[in-house]
Length: 419
Ligand SMILES: C[S@@+](CC[C@H](N)C(=O)[O-])C[C@H]1O[C@@H](n2cnc3c(N)ncnc32)[C@H](O)[C@@H]1O
Image (cartoon, rainbow, N blue to C red; front, side, top):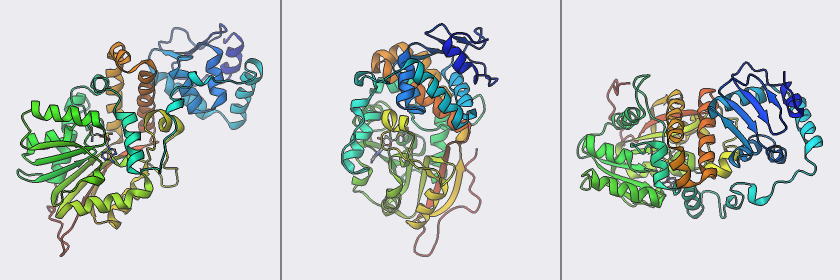
């Protein structure tokens, strides 16, 4: 039986069958307290955050500031909370907000210094101009290379891995993902590869090392480029691989045999997809291939902007399109589409592994990036895992060819790039 006043308000709804319990600062306890996964409402400020921005933003702020806390597995708590919230009617949601608003919090007040990232919120300039993109990218990627090492592990790959077997490790799956991209692109020794949005250089190094190509990668993150340049030298690949701190729109070379774009399209924006694909097509020789790997949303009628939590605290200006939109934009701007594959279950597994890495390295991650940032990453990765599992988002790899003047694509009759 729930007790405590908050317990009486929330207890009505917390019967989802999910293994989760709640405690609150007023002594309320709800659910089986032996359950390993618990949500703790530490102070009335947690409720202030929720009331000031009902929905994911308020809940996220309450968690990031520690007024809402969890013990056990964040993902398990999030899944239970999502099940509860999804099960509530609008009338029930309003009833809960009215109950906590009228009893506890008058007036609702969120101190500026407590609203995480508030000062970081405003991005100036035209959305997806080069200047604004470079600020947006620095906010997410120029956090600390060490922090990313702790989360991503030795591969330093920050995109969906591809697990050849259910029990493959993250490292094996990241190797397999880059290899799959190389095979889809038909890379052979001596070819020239451009990798746009290259991160810490994982694809560039893999293609140069295992396929003998001449690889150029570009990233808008200065810290990523510095890390990748050192890694390339350390791996003895400096004669074949190069990473530049550069906007993909400023690459001057042309005539590439292949282009990979792994996790960049989310930063492009719907409006710019035509010019993005046109530019990539102009960089390829006739018969050259593009592999576009990105997160998509399942339906064209959903908004492409990410939710307020992701937009403000994680990926400013990120946008997700439906795979149909990506394919149409490729077709209309220089590519024949040859293959499309959805790897969303693989992204859920990848995120599970990143969450486990962050958990295992929590103390050092907090020392490196601060507790609020570590909490933002923990929350966004657990929430994203849930979104892939529940088919709120997908991961699509689309292969296109710039056919030659006679319509030749140079593809094998039955491509076999394995699993
Ligand atoms: C999710 S990360 C993926 C990194 C890498 N491809 C991987 O698989 O690990 C997205 C990358 O896109 C880059 N990026 C975003 N906008 C860019 C732009 N306009 N020009 C070049 N790189 C960009 C970021 O700097 C980052 O390296």
